[in-house]
Length: 340
Image 1: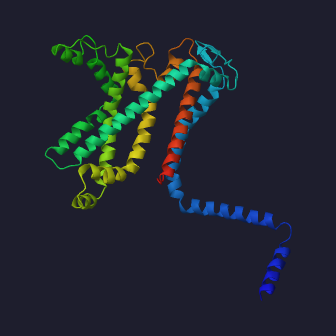
Image 2: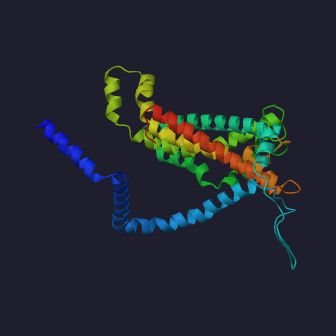
Protein backbone atom coordinates (compact mmCIF):
# COMPACT_ATOMS: atom_id res chain seq x y z
CA UNK A 1 0.00 0.00 0.00
CA UNK A 2 2.83 2.39 0.89
CA UNK A 3 4.59 1.62 -2.38
CA UNK A 4 1.41 2.27 -4.33
CA UNK A 5 0.92 5.63 -2.58
CA UNK A 6 4.48 6.74 -3.24
CA UNK A 7 4.20 5.80 -6.88
CA UNK A 8 0.99 7.83 -7.17
CA UNK A 9 2.68 10.89 -5.65
CA UNK A 10 5.66 10.54 -7.97
CA UNK A 11 3.37 10.18 -10.97
CA UNK A 12 1.43 13.28 -9.97
CA UNK A 13 4.67 15.25 -9.64
CA UNK A 14 5.78 14.07 -13.07
CA UNK A 15 2.44 15.02 -14.60
CA UNK A 16 2.89 18.64 -13.47
CA UNK A 17 5.69 19.13 -15.91
CA UNK A 18 8.71 21.48 -15.78
CA UNK A 19 6.54 24.61 -15.58
CA UNK A 20 4.84 23.55 -12.34
CA UNK A 21 6.89 25.86 -10.00
CA UNK A 22 6.10 28.90 -12.14
CA UNK A 23 2.42 27.96 -12.18
CA UNK A 24 2.37 27.60 -8.40
CA UNK A 25 4.14 30.97 -8.04
CA UNK A 26 1.57 32.69 -10.24
CA UNK A 27 -1.17 31.02 -8.24
CA UNK A 28 0.22 32.39 -4.98
CA UNK A 29 0.51 35.90 -6.46
CA UNK A 30 -3.08 35.66 -7.65
CA UNK A 31 -4.17 34.59 -4.17
CA UNK A 32 -2.35 37.55 -2.63
CA UNK A 33 -3.91 39.99 -5.07
CA UNK A 34 -7.30 38.46 -4.44
CA UNK A 35 -6.76 38.78 -0.69
CA UNK A 36 -5.77 42.43 -1.08
CA UNK A 37 -8.89 43.11 -3.14
CA UNK A 38 -11.08 41.37 -0.57
CA UNK A 39 -9.46 43.35 2.25
CA UNK A 40 -9.98 46.61 0.34
CA UNK A 41 -13.61 45.70 -0.41
CA UNK A 42 -14.23 44.77 3.23
CA UNK A 43 -12.43 47.69 4.88
CA UNK A 44 -12.93 50.39 2.23
CA UNK A 45 -14.47 52.74 4.78
CA UNK A 46 -11.41 52.56 7.05
CA UNK A 47 -9.10 53.18 4.08
CA UNK A 48 -11.25 56.15 3.03
CA UNK A 49 -11.00 57.62 6.54
CA UNK A 50 -7.23 57.37 6.81
CA UNK A 51 -6.51 58.44 3.24
CA UNK A 52 -6.73 62.22 4.00
CA UNK A 53 -4.41 61.78 6.99
CA UNK A 54 -1.90 59.84 4.90
CA UNK A 55 -2.08 62.52 2.19
CA UNK A 56 -1.56 65.38 4.65
CA UNK A 57 1.35 63.61 6.36
CA UNK A 58 2.88 62.91 2.97
CA UNK A 59 2.71 66.60 2.06
CA UNK A 60 3.77 67.99 5.44
CA UNK A 61 6.42 65.40 6.36
CA UNK A 62 7.24 63.34 3.30
CA UNK A 63 7.97 66.15 0.84
CA UNK A 64 10.18 68.24 3.20
CA UNK A 65 12.06 65.07 4.15
CA UNK A 66 12.75 64.16 0.53
CA UNK A 67 13.67 67.75 -0.27
CA UNK A 68 16.02 67.93 2.71
CA UNK A 69 17.81 64.73 1.74
CA UNK A 70 18.20 66.05 -1.80
CA UNK A 71 19.59 69.41 -0.64
CA UNK A 72 22.08 67.63 1.62
CA UNK A 73 23.60 66.13 -1.54
CA UNK A 74 24.12 69.55 -3.18
CA UNK A 75 26.06 72.74 -2.47
CA UNK A 76 22.93 74.92 -2.16
CA UNK A 77 23.23 78.22 -0.31
CA UNK A 78 21.55 81.60 -0.47
CA UNK A 79 23.81 82.71 -3.33
CA UNK A 80 23.03 79.91 -5.78
CA UNK A 81 19.40 78.92 -5.11
CA UNK A 82 16.55 80.11 -7.30
CA UNK A 83 15.23 83.49 -6.16
CA UNK A 84 13.25 86.47 -7.36
CA UNK A 85 14.59 90.02 -6.95
CA UNK A 86 12.01 92.57 -8.04
CA UNK A 87 10.93 91.65 -11.54
CA UNK A 88 13.99 89.48 -12.16
CA UNK A 89 13.98 85.74 -11.56
CA UNK A 90 17.38 84.12 -11.02
CA UNK A 91 17.64 80.43 -11.75
CA UNK A 92 19.32 78.01 -9.36
CA UNK A 93 22.98 77.25 -10.05
CA UNK A 94 23.80 74.82 -7.25
CA UNK A 95 25.09 71.41 -8.25
CA UNK A 96 25.12 67.85 -6.99
CA UNK A 97 28.12 67.04 -4.76
CA UNK A 98 27.21 63.60 -3.44
CA UNK A 99 28.28 62.79 0.11
CA UNK A 100 30.82 65.62 0.38
CA UNK A 101 28.65 67.54 2.86
CA UNK A 102 28.40 64.53 5.15
CA UNK A 103 32.16 64.01 5.01
CA UNK A 104 32.76 67.68 5.86
CA UNK A 105 30.31 67.71 8.79
CA UNK A 106 31.54 64.44 10.28
CA UNK A 107 35.17 65.57 9.99
CA UNK A 108 34.42 68.90 11.65
CA UNK A 109 35.24 68.90 15.41
CA UNK A 110 32.15 71.07 15.93
CA UNK A 111 29.93 68.07 15.13
CA UNK A 112 31.53 65.96 17.87
CA UNK A 113 31.21 68.81 20.38
CA UNK A 114 27.54 69.33 19.57
CA UNK A 115 26.88 65.57 19.64
CA UNK A 116 28.51 65.06 23.05
CA UNK A 117 26.58 67.93 24.63
CA UNK A 118 23.32 66.87 22.95
CA UNK A 119 23.66 63.33 24.33
CA UNK A 120 24.62 64.64 27.77
CA UNK A 121 21.70 67.09 27.78
CA UNK A 122 19.26 64.38 26.63
CA UNK A 123 20.39 61.76 29.16
CA UNK A 124 20.32 64.20 32.09
CA UNK A 125 16.96 65.70 31.16
CA UNK A 126 15.24 62.36 30.56
CA UNK A 127 16.72 60.77 33.71
CA UNK A 128 15.76 63.64 36.01
CA UNK A 129 12.35 64.03 34.39
CA UNK A 130 11.58 60.33 34.76
CA UNK A 131 12.73 60.23 38.40
CA UNK A 132 10.68 63.30 39.38
CA UNK A 133 7.66 62.17 37.36
CA UNK A 134 7.72 58.75 38.99
CA UNK A 135 8.07 60.24 42.48
CA UNK A 136 5.19 62.66 41.94
CA UNK A 137 3.01 60.00 40.32
CA UNK A 138 3.60 57.68 43.26
CA UNK A 139 2.60 60.38 45.73
CA UNK A 140 -0.48 61.42 43.74
CA UNK A 141 -1.61 57.81 43.45
CA UNK A 142 -2.50 57.83 47.15
CA UNK A 143 -5.68 59.10 48.72
CA UNK A 144 -5.29 62.45 50.52
CA UNK A 145 -7.16 65.70 50.85
CA UNK A 146 -6.70 68.16 47.97
CA UNK A 147 -5.26 65.58 45.59
CA UNK A 148 -7.17 67.01 42.60
CA UNK A 149 -5.81 70.50 43.28
CA UNK A 150 -2.24 69.19 43.45
CA UNK A 151 -2.72 67.34 40.19
CA UNK A 152 -3.97 70.47 38.45
CA UNK A 153 -1.07 72.52 39.81
CA UNK A 154 1.51 70.00 38.65
CA UNK A 155 -0.04 69.75 35.19
CA UNK A 156 -0.03 73.55 34.78
CA UNK A 157 3.47 73.78 33.18
CA UNK A 158 2.23 71.41 30.47
CA UNK A 159 -0.80 73.61 29.75
CA UNK A 160 1.19 76.84 29.34
CA UNK A 161 2.66 77.36 25.84
CA UNK A 162 6.34 76.44 25.79
CA UNK A 163 7.64 79.79 24.57
CA UNK A 164 5.72 81.60 27.32
CA UNK A 165 7.26 79.35 29.96
CA UNK A 166 10.76 79.83 28.56
CA UNK A 167 10.42 83.63 28.51
CA UNK A 168 9.16 83.55 32.10
CA UNK A 169 12.19 81.52 33.14
CA UNK A 170 14.46 83.89 31.21
CA UNK A 171 13.10 86.70 33.36
CA UNK A 172 13.64 84.65 36.53
CA UNK A 173 17.25 83.94 35.52
CA UNK A 174 18.09 87.58 34.79
CA UNK A 175 21.33 88.40 36.56
CA UNK A 176 20.46 91.93 37.64
CA UNK A 177 16.69 91.95 38.09
CA UNK A 178 15.74 88.27 38.19
CA UNK A 179 13.70 86.98 41.11
CA UNK A 180 16.10 84.12 41.81
CA UNK A 181 19.07 86.42 42.30
CA UNK A 182 16.92 88.80 44.36
CA UNK A 183 16.13 85.92 46.71
CA UNK A 184 19.79 84.93 46.88
CA UNK A 185 20.78 88.53 47.56
CA UNK A 186 18.29 88.66 50.41
CA UNK A 187 20.01 85.64 51.94
CA UNK A 188 23.44 87.22 51.63
CA UNK A 189 24.48 85.12 48.61
CA UNK A 190 26.06 86.83 45.64
CA UNK A 191 24.21 86.81 42.31
CA UNK A 192 24.66 83.77 40.07
CA UNK A 193 25.31 84.38 36.36
CA UNK A 194 22.62 81.90 35.32
CA UNK A 195 22.74 82.64 31.59
CA UNK A 196 26.16 84.28 31.34
CA UNK A 197 28.38 81.45 32.55
CA UNK A 198 28.69 78.27 30.39
CA UNK A 199 28.25 75.86 33.29
CA UNK A 200 25.32 77.70 34.86
CA UNK A 201 23.73 78.15 31.44
CA UNK A 202 23.76 74.37 30.97
CA UNK A 203 22.24 73.91 34.42
CA UNK A 204 19.57 76.48 33.55
CA UNK A 205 18.47 74.90 30.27
CA UNK A 206 18.31 71.46 31.89
CA UNK A 207 16.22 72.83 34.76
CA UNK A 208 13.75 74.52 32.41
CA UNK A 209 13.41 71.47 30.18
CA UNK A 210 12.83 69.24 33.20
CA UNK A 211 10.18 71.66 34.49
CA UNK A 212 8.41 71.46 31.13
CA UNK A 213 8.70 67.67 30.83
CA UNK A 214 7.71 66.50 34.31
CA UNK A 215 3.91 66.94 33.85
CA UNK A 216 3.78 64.62 30.83
CA UNK A 217 5.92 62.02 32.56
CA UNK A 218 3.87 62.27 35.74
CA UNK A 219 0.51 61.89 33.97
CA UNK A 220 1.69 58.91 31.90
CA UNK A 221 3.19 57.11 34.89
CA UNK A 222 0.17 57.91 37.05
CA UNK A 223 -2.04 56.20 34.49
CA UNK A 224 0.28 53.20 34.59
CA UNK A 225 0.16 53.08 38.39
CA UNK A 226 -3.63 53.12 38.41
CA UNK A 227 -3.69 50.12 36.07
CA UNK A 228 -1.77 47.93 38.54
CA UNK A 229 -4.25 45.77 40.52
CA UNK A 230 -4.45 46.78 44.18
CA UNK A 231 -4.75 43.12 45.19
CA UNK A 232 -1.06 42.65 44.41
CA UNK A 233 -0.07 45.26 47.00
CA UNK A 234 -2.48 43.81 49.55
CA UNK A 235 -1.11 40.30 49.07
CA UNK A 236 2.48 41.53 49.29
CA UNK A 237 1.72 43.50 52.45
CA UNK A 238 0.10 40.46 54.05
CA UNK A 239 3.24 38.47 53.20
CA UNK A 240 5.31 41.03 55.09
CA UNK A 241 6.86 42.87 52.12
CA UNK A 242 8.34 46.26 53.00
CA UNK A 243 7.36 49.39 51.02
CA UNK A 244 10.62 49.31 49.07
CA UNK A 245 10.10 45.63 48.22
CA UNK A 246 6.54 46.35 47.02
CA UNK A 247 7.85 49.21 44.90
CA UNK A 248 10.67 47.13 43.43
CA UNK A 249 8.77 43.91 42.73
CA UNK A 250 5.28 45.24 41.90
CA UNK A 251 5.39 48.90 40.91
CA UNK A 252 8.44 48.91 38.65
CA UNK A 253 7.51 45.72 36.72
CA UNK A 254 3.93 46.99 36.40
CA UNK A 255 5.18 50.26 34.90
CA UNK A 256 7.66 48.68 32.49
CA UNK A 257 5.53 49.00 29.34
CA UNK A 258 4.52 52.60 30.08
CA UNK A 259 8.04 53.54 31.13
CA UNK A 260 9.61 52.24 27.93
CA UNK A 261 7.19 54.25 25.82
CA UNK A 262 7.53 57.55 27.69
CA UNK A 263 11.31 57.24 27.85
CA UNK A 264 11.47 56.78 24.08
CA UNK A 265 9.16 59.74 23.41
CA UNK A 266 10.93 61.95 25.93
CA UNK A 267 14.32 61.10 24.43
CA UNK A 268 13.20 62.05 20.93
CA UNK A 269 11.57 65.29 22.11
CA UNK A 270 14.55 66.30 24.24
CA UNK A 271 17.07 65.48 21.52
CA UNK A 272 15.22 67.93 19.26
CA UNK A 273 14.22 70.47 21.93
CA UNK A 274 14.90 73.63 19.95
CA UNK A 275 12.69 76.20 21.81
CA UNK A 276 14.29 75.84 25.26
CA UNK A 277 17.86 76.22 24.00
CA UNK A 278 17.20 78.92 21.44
CA UNK A 279 14.78 81.08 23.41
CA UNK A 280 16.62 80.83 26.72
CA UNK A 281 20.29 81.12 25.75
CA UNK A 282 20.36 81.23 21.92
CA UNK A 283 23.08 78.60 22.19
CA UNK A 284 25.24 80.80 24.38
CA UNK A 285 27.17 82.03 26.11
CA UNK A 286 29.36 81.59 23.07
CA UNK A 287 28.25 78.23 21.75
CA UNK A 288 28.32 76.33 25.05
CA UNK A 289 24.67 75.22 24.95
CA UNK A 290 24.32 74.62 21.22
CA UNK A 291 22.79 71.22 20.41
CA UNK A 292 22.55 69.55 17.02
CA UNK A 293 19.17 71.00 16.07
CA UNK A 294 20.13 74.59 16.98
CA UNK A 295 23.32 74.18 14.96
CA UNK A 296 21.23 73.12 11.97
CA UNK A 297 19.10 76.24 12.45
CA UNK A 298 22.20 78.41 12.68
CA UNK A 299 23.56 77.02 9.41
CA UNK A 300 20.35 77.88 7.54
CA UNK A 301 19.26 81.18 9.10
CA UNK A 302 22.16 82.80 11.00
CA UNK A 303 25.37 82.06 9.14
CA UNK A 304 26.36 84.20 6.18
CA UNK A 305 25.97 83.05 3.51
CA UNK A 306 23.14 80.85 4.69
CA UNK A 307 24.15 77.26 4.02
CA UNK A 308 20.98 75.34 3.11
CA UNK A 309 22.87 72.21 2.10
CA UNK A 310 24.84 72.18 5.35
CA UNK A 311 21.70 72.67 7.41
CA UNK A 312 19.96 69.84 5.56
CA UNK A 313 22.98 67.63 6.20
CA UNK A 314 22.78 68.30 9.94
CA UNK A 315 19.06 67.54 9.82
CA UNK A 316 19.52 64.22 8.03
CA UNK A 317 22.23 63.21 10.50
CA UNK A 318 19.91 64.02 13.41
CA UNK A 319 17.20 61.86 11.82
CA UNK A 320 19.69 59.02 11.28
CA UNK A 321 20.88 59.16 14.90
CA UNK A 322 17.32 59.03 16.24
CA UNK A 323 16.41 56.16 13.93
CA UNK A 324 19.47 54.20 15.10
CA UNK A 325 18.53 54.87 18.71
CA UNK A 326 14.93 53.76 18.12
CA UNK A 327 16.05 50.54 16.42
CA UNK A 328 18.55 49.69 19.16
CA UNK A 329 15.97 50.55 21.81
CA UNK A 330 13.36 48.34 20.14
CA UNK A 331 15.83 45.47 19.86
CA UNK A 332 16.72 45.72 23.54
CA UNK A 333 13.02 45.65 24.45
CA UNK A 334 12.50 42.54 22.36
CA UNK A 335 15.34 40.81 24.21
CA UNK A 336 13.59 41.65 27.49
CA UNK A 337 10.37 40.10 26.19
CA UNK A 338 8.56 43.37 25.54
CA UNK A 339 6.49 43.61 22.35
CA UNK A 340 6.79 47.05 20.78
